Image (cartoon, rainbow, N blue to C red):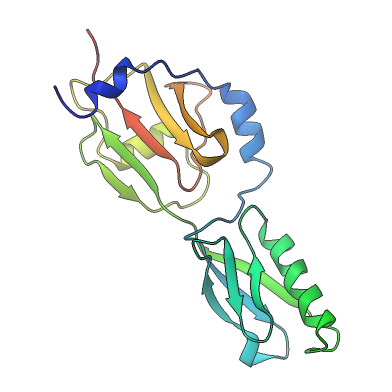
Amino acid sequence: MTATAGCATQDYPFVDVSEANARSMQGTRLDAGDKVRVAVFDEPSLTGDYEVGSSGSVTLPLISDVPAAGSTPQQMADAITAKLAQGGYVLNPRVAVDVISYRPFYVIGEVGKPGEYTFTGEMSLLQGIAKAGGFTTRANKGTVVVRRKSWGGGRKVPVGDPGLIIMPGDTITVNESML
């Protein structure tokens, strides 16, 4: 028995792909492992590249920790602006936050090259599986299990149209076919 075969016996609920895709279209939220560039205009000593730490915050000069997990880059920029203005560190601060790279997604199980893959923007479930070398001959090509932090666990996802949009941090498990 392979390590993924045991996963096939679990009874995960099915995800509503249309609803999940609608939520992903609302914007990717920052989380631990994401890398961002913070630009404070006219303040080169405060401008730099930072990683969202395991605590979900980014540590910046002068203002220390700024919560990032769960926010959009614009919301993070607004929080930095408020902290800089509140502390009197910068008069009329103007801040921009850009994502350098999101945390990776993972594909495991019955694929050609299981592993960690760079998230590069909007990508379908099938494109993610293709990055991992596609299905093996033993793979269940009808459904896969996707774990997403916001779901609090695994969900069965049908493979096909409409395809689920992959998010940073997702773990895709392709189980062995039971046929």
